[in-house]
Image 1: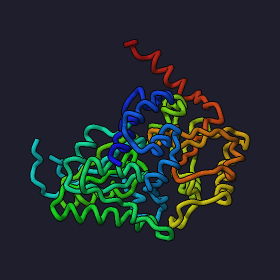
Image 2: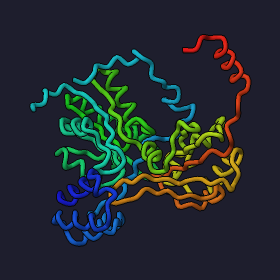
Image 3: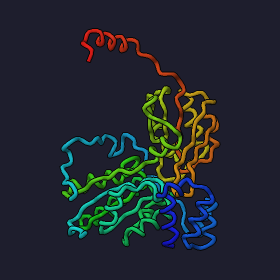
Image 4: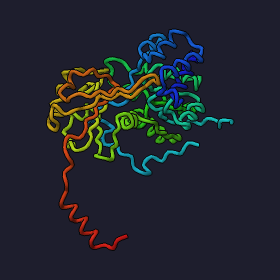
Length: 89
Length: 268
């Protein structure tokens, strides 16, 4: 599993690979020594197959509920000095 | 390098949208130096990635549930993070995108930690909005850009400016007043269509946008007439971008005043 995540991180952070050709992607997969089916899913750019093989899925990630005037945060506008928290060291 | 002893602190960091592409060196450092990491991210694979950076990553995902009010979920997110801060831990809350954009729990957690005297700060991340500008080729400076949460936009009469861009976030949940659903459907978007039709012609071209979460993906950039919005296949990750529909209106009075100033003041 760690090789797969390592490869995905590389694909995300390497300027050649992020928007590279299918050939460049296949070469990176071949070097990564990962399961053939996972490699094929990556080369096919199939998120659905990759999720299935890794037993993962998109997560519910909405971080905000619509705020109405009844919400406790509705009128919150931060003011300078209003929250005197210390800075992290 | 040694890490200083823990006294209880909170950092909420953004790791951007695309795995591997957007995380900042500072966000990674907060993650690696934390005692405990809480993860509010958009994909299970991203959680696996975080687990490579830290041995104690706790997903916030179990706090969501169908039928559960999301406000309660966000309060619980604050509670679990603050409990560890109070226990003297260096806590890092990791959120997809930017932790302060369309995100209630990070703001609230930082506010609460500071009220209790703990050091707390937010580190920005690359948001979906940033990706939108890059992928679609929008510069908000050219015509202006308005952003609303889709349901709130429907709940109130807003004075929108159709000569600027209008971006509606969380469009897949548009109209959910209960905040207990994970999606709404075409009937809700019919209502939204009626709201938008006050200012836009039905044949006006709009864009459904979704940034790439994994580096094997491409962004979704799907153009359609506004009238097709109710039938569009939308998820919680989609955003509606509405291009300007009118020319900007010239304010002759202000222009005249500015010209008068130019004439009366010495040239720099």
